[in-house]
Length: 392
Ligand SMILES: C[S@@+](CC[C@H](N)C(=O)[O-])C[C@H]1O[C@@H](n2cnc3c(N)ncnc32)[C@H](O)[C@@H]1O
Ligand code: SF4
Image 1: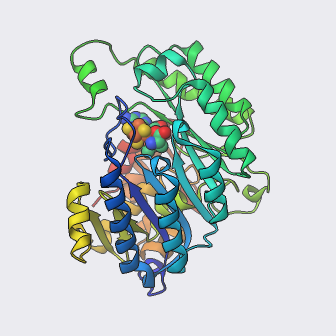
Image 2 (image 1 turned 30 degrees about the horizontal axis):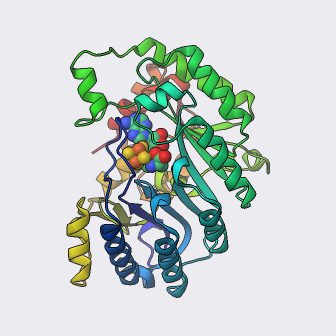
């Protein structure tokens, strides 16, 4: 199996568990915090990097969160210098997630100087009232300003995150946001329907009957997203991800991956190995899935004692892992080429999952070609339910 090779792991995710303020919908592990804890986290992260560096040769690095751009220049410099010292710089794709309120020209320059070449910026909406309702700390003007700062600093690869089906969002508001976002001419777009996560203020408001979910409108908004993105030159390559393709890589690739796609996430959806560092991060290396403690104090305590901060470490039975890989890959428009799946997992979709594939095809949710299996547009809308059928 490809993924069990002893070659160094080529993908690194780092979780930064801090935000200036929690947004009303968000369940990612992050908290508003003092400078002192952030300093402690940075030291602990450097320690964790040192522990895994000898098994890493990153082709993709992704700093996500939380809000990685919340760290100040000095903290970022410490992290980037240690990556350099550990020989971990030089990735083909190095992404940092930013909140528009925390982008500055100095930070953007520092990022460029150390080889960060992709920024993912959370904007969610360009409607002032909705931004406020979501508990975002930035205005629409800040989105445009930060985008300009990034372009000026030389970032030629920028992703914008948008959300739709936000309570009180009408189709007109969604269209206006989409049109303005397209006019920014980013290389990549991620757009998720709002998920009502337990224990978030938005979920509580829903439970209290303050608004109702309009499933039909959500479907129409998803359709609008797909057609608007297509007219602006984006190719959808995963349920919620769209990328441009100026190099026309899409023509000759078996996977139909546009050239501006996020390679880090593609590796993840294709079941590749990756280290996951920082509080709450999961990793998957050679058949073993790890999860770090979702508690920044505890994470720091452990690393200060010279131990990794693992809450769990589990070797997955091969068939279970193959089922998960099947499920992840089906999120992608290209689905699974049978040979590629076999190469990755040593299982054959055509043997293990024939019944499931036929059922989905009969329902109109999927298409089984001689060389691959993939979901249809309708199937992508219900991808979570479809994917679940593959889990063993
Ligand atoms: C870690 S955040 C991005 C960076 C930065 N923290 C920010 O928000 O500006 C990742 C993205 O996940 C999406 N997201 C988070 N919670 C969500 C939810 N409950 N439903 C849908 N999308 C969500 C948002 O689009 C968000 O931009
Ligand atoms: S959406 Fe981004 S800024 Fe908002 S709480 Fe979640 S991680 Fe933090």
